[in-house]
Length: 358
Image (tube, rainbow, N blue to C red; front, side, top):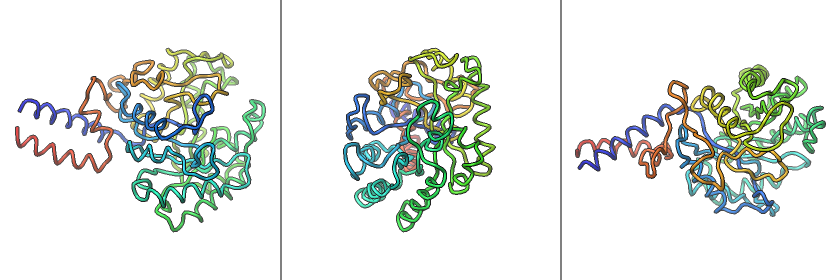
């Protein structure tokens, strides 16, 4: 009897926390591991499970942003992250890789195959589709200076967006919002305005750490973040802005005046994540695990995908962020908070029944 009452209370707390959370919370996930080997379904599942069970997380991090639809090492096979997302009930911001190519036919073929193979259990988890990632930044003056790699111009991105809309027009994904992800500087460049006109949402990657021309001491991180975020919002006009990458590295080289450290990574999480983003907008933090060996900066908030993070993830009371979950070794609340909206309804019914029993 007492055990049933405890379960009912835990479920009520979890449901109350879920109702307070607005916007998707998640991380980014590349197609390969840090040794350049292709991630398999088990690798993605471990990531997604860890994200949902992070100790003290402010809400449930049960969403993921992907960069491609194609399984690494194949031509057009759907990425195994799709199966992992279905298995863990993880929502997805899909990505179509657009840099260094004149065709996204293989990306679209992989996506269409996933729709045919997995059906509604896949499409229901898709929250949006990003056509490209930082392509405009890569061809900009700063992108070239920083050797960011091969990019694509606004005309190419707009044409790719039109192709995606046309290809998906008669599929269950036709109603999903389509956007593009880029750096704030690309969005605030008026020469890229046609891309803003073409999208349903603007995805932006915001890193005060890399803003060395703005006095990027950690003590200035909030000021810099607010400036570049506002620049993006202004450029976006009436289009919603989704935070697709942000974070502060816990180790690596000093960049300008910015110093990586666990303390600074925690401080950025608290000041930017807790006080401005979590539970108030769509945000995919960078990152749960490091998987790009070319990046000297390391952003992972966990070691070896442990559910015990490198620093305390809970947000201060009054910060506006969702209350922390997964606070014990076994938490009924965390299990409910990680569930789907349909599950919330089911648990609500179960909660009423349990309360009637006790």
